[in-house]
Image 1 (cartoon, rainbow, N blue to C red):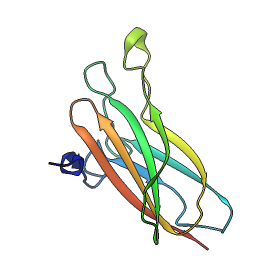
Image 2 (image 1 turned 120 degrees about the vertical axis):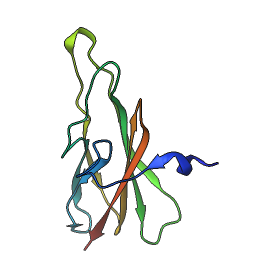
Image 3 (image 1 turned 90 degrees about the vertical axis):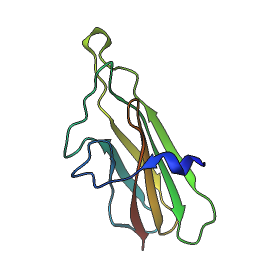
Image 4 (image 1 turned 60 degrees about the vertical axis):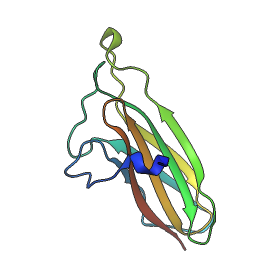
Length: 123
């Protein structure tokens, strides 16, 4: 089995574990894109000591590219200790070099890996 066999996908409007990518549909060549990735946008994900999102990663692959590049990773460490809870929300800022696909990956300690994608066009 490969790692991809363990990654789940679904519609974020019906499944609380799916990372939601909020980014512009297109950006001007050479400009900066503001990208938000969150988990639990439509259905709140519980953030407790027992059940939490541990991290979110954001990747990019150009339409004509061979490789995926990681834009960044955000780890969430506060899961209820001393009543402090981190929310699974991450902001990324990147200069996207060419049209391609953004892929977000999130990890739930009880339900594993979840993935979503979004196209972005550079004009």
